[in-house]
Figure 1 (cartoon, rainbow, N blue to C red):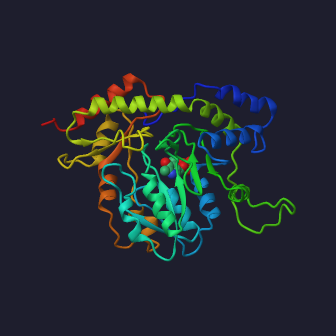
Figure 2 (spheres, helix red, strand yellow):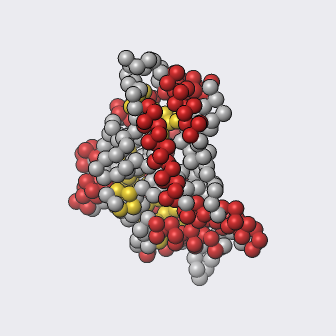
Figure 3 (tube, rainbow, N blue to C red):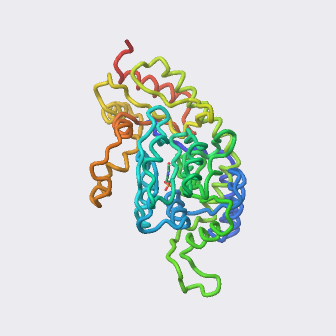
Length: 372
Ligand SMILES: *Cc1c(COP(=O)(O)O)cnc(C)c1O
């Protein structure tokens, strides 16, 4: 079996974890949490890092700290994981969606301005699959309309936009450290920001909004989204390996690109733009129109050969949970709908061997109609 993701834990993970156990520091109060927060914030060029339980929780915290509440509209891509939309809906806000760019698979910036209304409060940017959103035009629109920018950089550890770290743009940025990300804690997330007050607010929101003076008296509702010292220990060890991980992912992405470049019936990820080079969070492909089967069909054929894959995200405007709440009724975003039905990703974890990658390529070629 070649799983869709295998993490790589070949640095100081074991040593740091043992330090937690030997010292007895396993909770959020342990020293690795602050060390990981500081080191990670520094890596992405931010003043503050607030480590939390996972990337979805980081988005909950960021949305709350941005003051997004009932009736507030937040512009975001429809083609994304559920988390950013879930955070906004739970806060009482309304996700306002834009379609995808068919080449980069990121949000279509040309559709943003038409979606701005007097209720628009923020743009929630989600960088997808290893290639950042073109931030300059987006930041210009946000500034012109006085909108908050939140960056979901969960798939962007170590990536840059025109030389500036992803995760350094807007009021706040969020990260995930799920095992398929470029660095992992098992489960984990972080909000990063340059704003002292916002950082303090995020810390309170992460910790049930306990108050310094009167601990069990609450002025606001938060969550228990604390990260343990053990997660942070693994995270810090992973962070030391970030450059190596990004290099490895790029090498893997390039190997897939080369091996599949003459496959006429599939669209491959964009390798470079004038603002960034892909870091291949995962290696996604989109089936061309001349392939009869959709992604599910080809994925099943690969599964029959013991090769793990994952479908692309399912669009927010087609999520039953939101349609049942009368959100996005009759909305259509054709590019995202096609990506969701025709796109999936191949095994692309950091632990994937060169032999396994070749096996995946051979199996995939066998599933696709012969090149004309
Ligand atoms: C992984 C991911 C998340 C969620 O992170 P979790 O840690 O799994 O909760 C959010 N946004 C994007 C874009 C992601 O890829």
